[in-house]
Length: 301
Length: 301
Image (cartoon, rainbow over all chains, first blue to last red; front, side):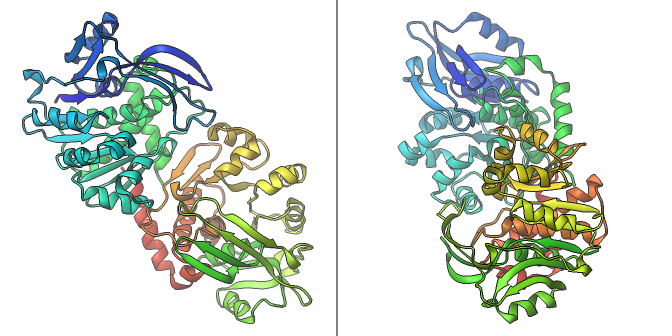
């Protein structure tokens, strides 16, 4: 079954201890879509400028990613982010954010998108997230990401959006900030009262945790001997997670949700092995399933 | 089968966001021994002053912990550590360290200790660790802890001790410092060339990882809604780990090592729920086994 995703489509200029790349393709919608596309068809909502290369449109189409909802603003430039990671590969330092056409982005949802049973609201203005969501007819699963910028800048709007969301997928710091609570277990409890029945906390190299009504699930991170670029790992995680669920039309069964989390970690563990989508372009579902099995071996006792 | 442990026996004065305690019992040998004692008999090597209460000697004996190797220096005071944790419960800030009788500690190994098949070298001067180890006859498993103080201050002596050790149990920062390598997977590879065939990395609330020749194992942390005092968690982990192995006379089989890691995490998750040994005094092996089962539920997919 198909997934609708709304998010950013960007050029990234990135420096990490492993190297530097200029104006490579990035953005939450891109990372999410590529990760999901290993499992199912994806319908992308976003905006680009006239500088966005036709070859990337072609690439997305070749991956069964629909770009009908990807607006092209002819007199504008694509969102451009410049960032740097230090030797710990922890949070990126933003050196420059040129929003360009993304600044006045108003998402359009093509008619063909409105029956999609799976929706992922990438990290954009919560008002726009709500706008997209309200145009999808009775989705089966709605998942959502956000960040400190919206938690502090548009809390009220964010809380409104969260009421309509089934699964919130955010990182550990964001979870604590959103809940205003330093203990993650208590933070999860608070957040699950805000709307999302399921909270997934991304913990970088430590893997991910999922809090549901029934239980807590902890998935390890993959032990990587070499990280090149952590950019997009979170959206790639979400893409692997939702892609796995959508492929078989899964709903909220604990067993499937858990496997989906591990698929999310699996996809994320690949994407950080190179810049941009380079690694995702190289791998197949066979590679993904093989690494999923490694996760089983890593976690079992 | 019995375990010999050498380490510190201390009074701790501790402040955490959950409260404050004065001169409560602590020290690596104490925490290790109590955790191990749920599984097997323990023989403690250490030193205390005349201020060390008889009631604690009695308590240790009641737990099948032998104190024949616990020297009592009548004209001295017991090691006293004063520390504070901030709201994140991350690394403790040391406010004062009064080594007292611990400063000139020279471990004595009673004859009855020398046949013990399991040895744990708690975090003390690596020269003293070697001194103890050389006096045990052909131990089956030797595990060891250390810290940045020895990594930077007595590197050569530490490397000599590590050559005689099977399992090194240290925290993540220490592993990276010891290996002079920021990537944990590469650090583990380096450390396993220094002597210990098995490296266990303690990661606080993120659980623990074990690197062996065959594989990597990752155990989650236990999702605690309330932490009171992290002091002693690492030594309690080591005690649970070694205790489980020693109970059944296990050696280096991957399956048993993995379960031992989870028992280590289980014991550590209890000890942080209260100050000093308060929580370990309350629980039984039934509580421990019940939480071990919870770990299984948390990690399975």
